[in-house]
Amino acid sequence: MIETGWISILPPLIAIALALITKEVYSSLFLGLLSGMVIYVVAAQEPFMAVFSRMFDMMAAKIAENSYMIIFLALLWAVITLVSKSGGTAAYGRWAERRLKTKRTTRLATALLGVLIFIDDGFNCLTIGTVMRPVYDRQRISREKLAYIIDATAAPICIIAPVSSWAVAVASEVSETNGFNVFLSTIPYNLYALLTILMVVFVCVSGLDFSKMKRAEDKAQLEGNAEVLAEEQQEEKQGKGRVIDLVLPIVVLIVCAILGMAYVGGFFRGVPFAEAIGENPTAGLSLGAFAGLVTAFILYIPRRIIKAKEFVGSIVSGVGSIVPPMLILILSWSLGGVCREMIGTGEFISGFIASAKVPLELLPFVVFVIAAIMSFSMGTSWGTFGLLIPIVTMICSTAAGAELLIPTLGATLAGSVYGDHCSPISDTTILASTGAQCEHIRHVETQIPYATLVAAVCAVGYLIIGFTHMPWIGMGVGAALLIAAVLVLHKITKGKSER
Image 1 (cartoon, helix red, strand yellow):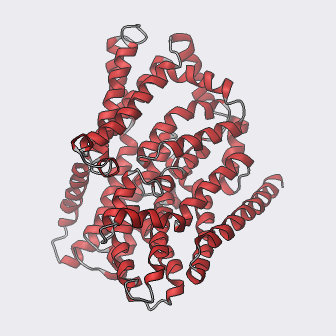
Image 2 (tube, one colour):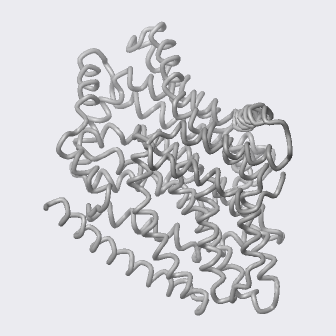
Image 3 (cartoon, rainbow, N blue to C red):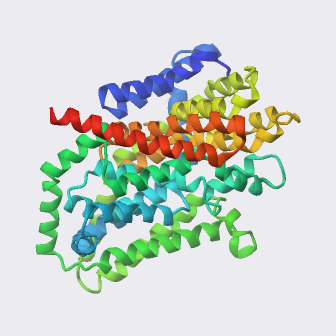
């Protein structure tokens, strides 16, 4: 890796700015990746053609590193396509609509599923999106709202769940032997995760929206999704699907995915469960997705819901449909790899905080802001807190700073999750838009105002915590500010739409 200083932040800024301006993700990510590789090759004084060879080397390396994720997504989308082909999706949509009679209950049911499926954030986004999307379409709730709810109950839930791949990752970064206890201690100080959950519940119950989300909801209410409903009506005429044709494959997939993560991590050989599921979660998820595929075969073929040839064709179609979001993932993984492994984006930003003479009382606030910037720029929360936790531990190692260690670690995790939550190049953001089948940039545009509002009140909370060392005061003030801000912003947006 070559230290390139402040210029190392340009590639992610180029990718993010272009994506938001042009509304086109593929070329934006590619140009960000290309600019990062140009910076590296120039700094390393390599021949210009090395830009392209190294760029494709990085893409190949990231595909290899994330091969299990690719296999999981391909298998999962094959299951989703088969469920739809069987008529199970349409049957479930009719069943759920009779029970989830209001938009409020539908939104709350989605949030509850997000809380319950806390093992892995990407798994959360894809499975809940699959289950709830038919209901949202029938009730004319925007897919942008679905994408926001599943994204907001993915990483923010995983980062405070003791049994998740995230808990293992955080505990492993803490140098002390009781890293897991340190992780548990940070939960009350993780204001972003806690206030995001409050934000989701409040928005689901009240139905109050603002900014571009309000416009997306108004559009969905007026226009609906006629194309999707027409497809479901066609399924109703042609298929013999029942609710179990969707529920059973998905339930088997979820259960076997959890068991698969435990198996791959060595749980059945004596490794603690919390540690086992964090060992290689995507390998376990792939086992679960394959189990769901086998279940669909056993469920559909004997009943002649789908012919054998159609079954295989649906698998091929499902794998093909995941190619566009997969390309986005590969480009974002590669861009993140260039920033972290070649031009030192994370090291530059983390070095800034290490060298800055920040008053200790302001440390949680400053670390939260810097972690948010890093995570947003690199599209990774794990990479962000992996860089910052050792620095924070070092800064707080003195007797004067020891009392602020846990609050500042909490702020580190909170800022990392915020950046990951709303970054266009974050894999969780990409998977949330994929699970909801919402245009990626539309998801980013509608989510950023919500996530940033929560982050703003968190910043106030961390200023309070830095001086009081009391998380519940910061949490209480943040919650009050958050609810008041939503009410005001909804009124402003509603007034503009009426004029």
